[in-house]
Length: 316
Image (cartoon, rainbow, N blue to C red; front, side, top):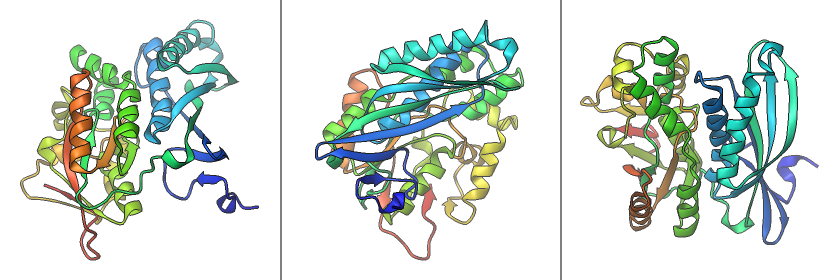
């Protein structure tokens, strides 16, 4: 039987969602994801924490609770004894913070270090939150500032200020758990996490899947300290330019939007925030409760009726 046709496969690969979801019973579904990448920071302990947060984020984006994880490791022989244990210690500490059990994994030798996780979670089949479902009138809420890709590029070029690098690392090491819990509790129309395709890339997927348009207020989008400065220096990852090319003709930016700010809306994020679409009263409740608990939350735009002739995304 084709996976797409299986009656218990609630979410597969056809919808650009963050995880696969398979129904196990009337009140229980399995949520599954895998994510891995090369180091984007120098400290192996930080790298392990960031990789864990990044992999867990996909499960949180579905409104689910992660429960188990498996290591995905590809490392050069000369780094196995000293570097890899620190990477795995960082990952284990972050998984412990999230209440997730690390249960093994698989390791191979490669020339370049790669680390990540396969994560399993659970959710009620009727409470899966998808990246489609946004409705006209919904507000768009973002839970982390942008700029990790640009700042990581500046770090690699040895041009980043220490305080800026530390702020980016702290953001990437912050779990999306509480934001996900509130989204599931209060209720949202759609949700995804902002990662490799940048804010506008993931918002485009949400708009396309929901059959709507989205409007973003560029001045309301939060940026990490230093991100705008480094973008102005041309320290942009190739993924940023690829993301912008991919959406060519699918977005419109107003004449007053700063070109560098627009670039940062395409910046590929690692362990970025959650992007939610929710009715105004629910979006404001989630935002208020997150802020009260010391988390971050920003209303950055709204969802509009589809326009068959216009672009899917407006940036004003």
